[in-house]
Length: 261
Image (tube, rainbow, N blue to C red; front, side, top):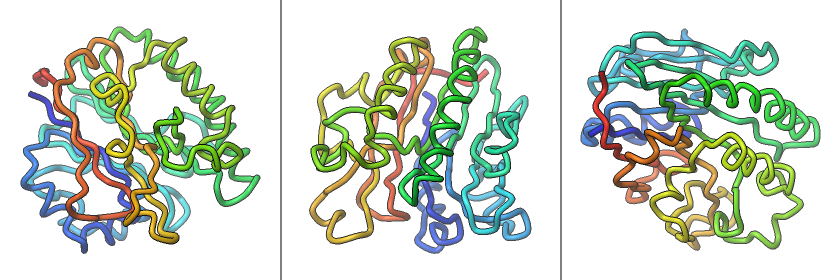
């Protein structure tokens, strides 16, 4: 069994202080994908680089205290690829790929457009430029699991207040249509929805820090494991862990009937 976990940490040092790696040590995971580490190489302690028996690999953002993604792997990858080859987004540390035999696991972090129109335009540029990349991956003849914070709730059942958010970043028609094209036209599979097609409130992975969003479960499902059809068909079990909070996101764990080569 292959266990893959993804979590937006909202700061790796903050999440570590809240016990995320003590939790990870008990999870029997093979790969832990993280986003928004908000750290540079010089900030990383020995514990952060090799936590809970894992070895960490990272794509840092150039801007301090911003973005960045990582992969914690129990087994050493055959190859690690840092970045998309797109200068604007590689500078923000948004993409890291690890190959294990015929399987690749990718930690990806899409831009958020919620802070202003300039960031929404950046998000649209990312979507436009990563789409052909996803098309190429789908034709590589490998199995892929893309884990991360996609900053898009796909359907009405994927957020609590969908009516009031139709003009807000993360639930814009253009964003949702783009994700539909990723699934329907390119053939990628939303693994959570494959296992739980109709779940609503239990599916949320992010809650705003404003108001009482967490207490009232006014959440969004914006963290995904999106996979090629072969490995997606091997998904057996999914869990969103909410018993302890490490960031404003919750860890998404999926078990696959698959053994790393």
